[in-house]
Image (cartoon, rainbow, N blue to C red):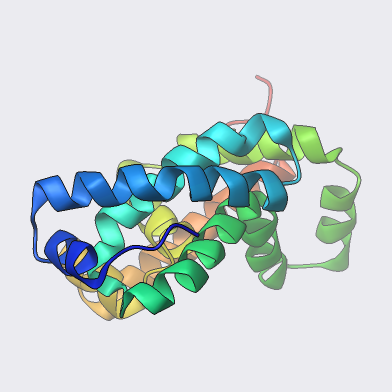
Length: 181
């Protein structure tokens, strides 16, 4: 990984736009290399690179030190590459029955990814935002509540509802928008 100086990281964390731009430019080749190695499908590499740069841009203040940057970035990229699988694993925890999990297991992975994107897009803005903050940006419930200006309980409730709506959409149950009329 390209060595990022303490000064550049600190300047970017303090809000220096020029330093942040330099940081993003310096990290992009490494992000692309990591994405090529970690992503299952080559077709998602450019999307992962862009999303990883957005995560760095938004979360640069949470990076403890330049030494921790490489590990943190690897984790971000791995999660972005595995986002559909991560969301499904979290959703599987909440499946109501073994029958529902069997139904999802029958769907081809590429079709499931498309359905997952459609399911997320079908959510209301508030449900989509809380789901992406938790599952993409990996924010804690407390961080999500502060960012949205709501209580922890409200953030948990929205997240639970968003996941339930995604599950309903994927399973094709009523009110999911997938039933034919």
